[in-house]
Length: 439
Image (tube, rainbow, N blue to C red; front, top):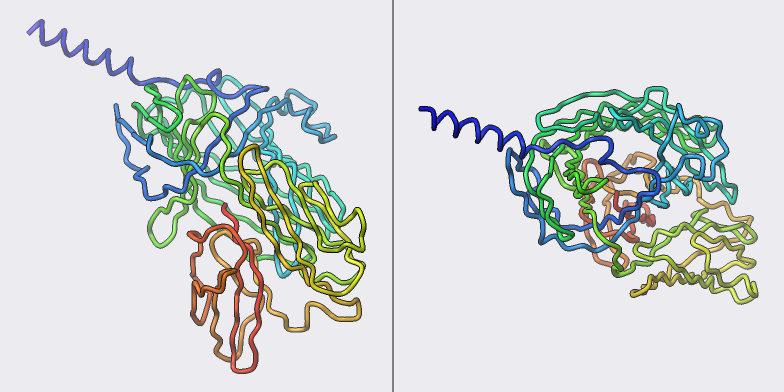
């Protein structure tokens, strides 16, 4: 009996020792930099979890990579009293990413995105964000303080922990951009054990499931966009040997099921095959107007542009990431972009149709799609009295979808790139160019 009691105690001690605890000291600090490799192996079972569990994701295959850098908030380039106060924020992060928003044909580029946190021994809390909106050649800095901060993590993180927090912020740039967003964040630490990725094996892992319910109200250039209520989920694996989750899986909830939309794992710096892609605004440029190019390329750090406009002299080319150009004559210009990294190069050519200033463009009644770029669903800016046929067509001419409506159609699985919406009625056929980008 004494031996049995001793074995039970020993087993209990082994279990306690095996369950790791992830503390504030184990998370990123100023100067931390991470490389996150993305994969499209979405069919993998990421959901199953448990105690003393073994997750083997070593066969994931990467296809692109982001860099994530943590900095001192007052070195991020924004002149803002809030970030110069250590009582407000002491850590910031950026992926140096670029994105865009588009509604009813109006487009805004968003660059230099930064998130600001207050990290203490007991919490990591997002308290603010900042970015720059590129609108018709003007960069508008947006500095946003949360009215209710977002408690991302409570430290220490231990198996069995659970917590719920609510956050809110409002951004209001009159006549340009308005956003009010509330978020309910629920964290549950629902597994511990060993996790393997292509980067390595981590024997002291904790698995956290985070459910986010977001309520987003937007207006762009004075035009309101339908309120968006979405539920998403993040599955994250932490290990004390790393200062950032070693694996992050993002999922969306639709049709009573969770669908994986992105997967990233911690990695060393790698070069992956480049993909060249860009969009431009205005969608219907006129002679003499400035056209702004939004670079949507992936896995690239050098860029070479040719605007097919030799009369513009040395302005016919550019090496900027997001250049602009003024076309001096009416016509169709084949704008060419070469995007490269140290190992790979890709090219894309997209026609830009420039009209004269006396042509009203878009035409009255012109169909427009939004959001554009889109990631999953597309809507149209008007309803139709007569029956129409809607086709989504690839740039090579392949019909990928055909139906009478776009309602509830999910295009998440499409590759990033340019597509065309064809709207066919008994009176006319209209074509709208749309850009697919991953979330």
